[in-house]
Length: 417
Picture (cartoon, rainbow, N blue to C red):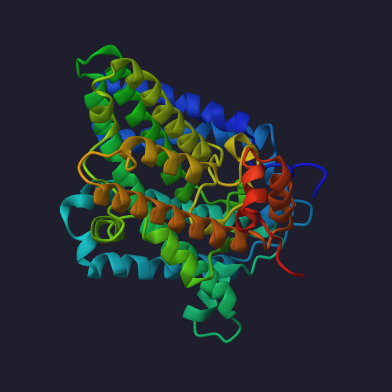
């Protein structure tokens, strides 16, 4: 047992400032009915600007040792090294671009909004990236980073390292899979929220719909922003990417296009009978049940906000111990699964006992998927002593600490030395 919870890589108060700025921008977007192709970049910028500014001015994250930057002993600026690193970054992106070009999944109209975004902001990103590489080069404690090793491989030199190249390729594969998907989710949530705001409904149902869509918009906006904002200067760089196939599979089956198959053909827990229908004869129960669902959604989206500009599946970008992560190790998964049970009510008899048993079985199985995700994430993060200290502290201080004592397999165990 550790004496105190380790400090968080992010300051939850700063992230709440970013959330407030994003919510203000959301209100303007809903009022003006701005097209979602512009709304999502504006929302990401509104959230990221105050977070990165306050992280720099107040938290002074650029001085952390974890950035890999040494401001006191700059190297000479080496144009060859800069060019090699930039070549390596482009080379790590190339397989992602090739995959987009070859794969039918990315050639339909589902991703059109993302391609519009990329056409406008991709060239800007390439230019800004080159300038950033040139500026930061003299200050990197180890300028021969993973990009440098990819560059050396592409130049046909023999002094590159397999592990470094693998880290870079895995990092861009994660970005390549999640950024388009999250951007499209955010675009659709903007449309859904604009529609909900302009729809006339009974007061509670109106508030429920608006808050429901707003919660998901917050989540996917911070998520997309997190995948894009990977900079050593702000200590948001990818420190390591999940190295195991088990970790990748457990995470990716929960997202499209894989979920279209898994969720309908296997983990089909949605029986078509939901909480609103169940509680229709008892209107007084609809409000507290609906509030419980919204609170679960708020915890879920708040768990993403807790990462600030550092959110990313399958990567280690610093240990977050503040906000909802001061309550339990996996608040997002707990809240998401709780909301699924509250919404789909598989435990309510509405046709046959077979349907009840089937739906409860498959929703419980989905919980098993998230348990596997949690375990693989913890195994990956446990290379960081701060995470080990945090997880051991949560064994006794989490809201669910008694559950870990009753079911020891749910408690955290530090890896063997």
